[in-house]
Figure 1: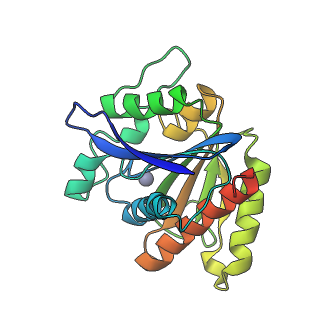
Figure 2: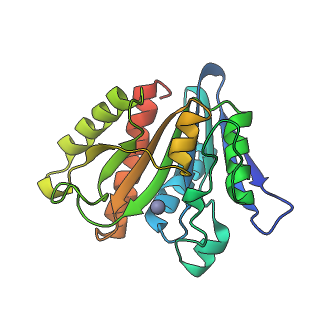
Length: 225
Ligand SMILES: [Zn+2]
């Protein structure tokens, strides 16, 4: 296993580090992004920790390739804001379309170049989906008809088995969101893409734990561990 550090959009004001974890064995390519919204800090911490743990050998990936961009929107992160414009509405909307923001273009090009089979986009949201169907906290979201659904269901089952507080349980949502990384990955790259949303009224340490565990379960289900 070899971990290399690179810089995305290197010669621009949007420069941000990313990591490639390469293994000796062929397998899927999985892209993990967080910080597309700059104020969703637990997801960024979980992604950075995954990259660090791979680099130090605390986490071992056996097959395939992992690409991690832990803090996509550095400018929004510096201000602890979601970001203006909302970067997650600027990804390509159709095969022939272009991203409407240079940072979204750079992230998307990275996934395209490496032919990502999977794209997990880590976020945080308001509310507990177990208490209201209208909120996104504690959900996995796919596009309607995504072939990622069976694996999402397995991941949710594993998560919910380990969460004693029922109102913290995760639910699956299917939703097309034009301009989002998830929908662009699915429609344009034909990747299996999932948005992970923890509820940010939970304690930060708990959110980081949930984000970390969800990614771990995906890696295991996809056969990379
Ligand atoms: Zn978000």
